[in-house]
Length: 105
Ligand SMILES: N=c1c2ncn([C@@H]3O[C@H](COP(=O)(O)OP(=O)(O)OP(=O)(O)O)[C@@H](O)[C@H]3O)c2ncn1[C@@H]1O[C@H](COP(=O)(O)O)[C@@H](O)[C@H]1O
Image (cartoon, rainbow, N blue to C red; front, side, top):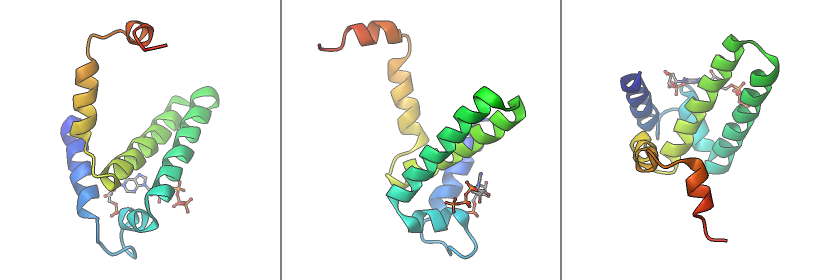
């Protein structure tokens, strides 16, 4: 699973500068960061709707759309899944409750 996400990430990165007539990802890159971010927001909203009122299959599809568009946004920002993995790894074992309590007032 992780390997496939790495492959997808590489495919997305390779679409920078590709022909927008034949590549959805190239078209998205061409629209710019704000439009890509907007798509992530829209897909997140669709995840929320599916989670509360649709089937598990619908939620799976919307979650896939969200992850895919998030990968495009990360690539546009020059970030990688490895950056996200490293951040999650850094947080490993730190309870969200403890982390929040330690924040400056
Ligand atoms: N995983 C995906 C993937 N998931 C969703 N989508 C597309 O994302 C779009 C989202 O649909 P929407 O209806 O929300 O968007 P829209 O109406 O097209 O866009 P708006 O006009 O609303 O902004 C659809 O066109 C989907 O086909 C994807 N497009 C591509 N991929 C992967 O990216 C690879 C590269 O794609 P291309 O760049 O198109 O070759 C593909 O081989 C796939 O592996």
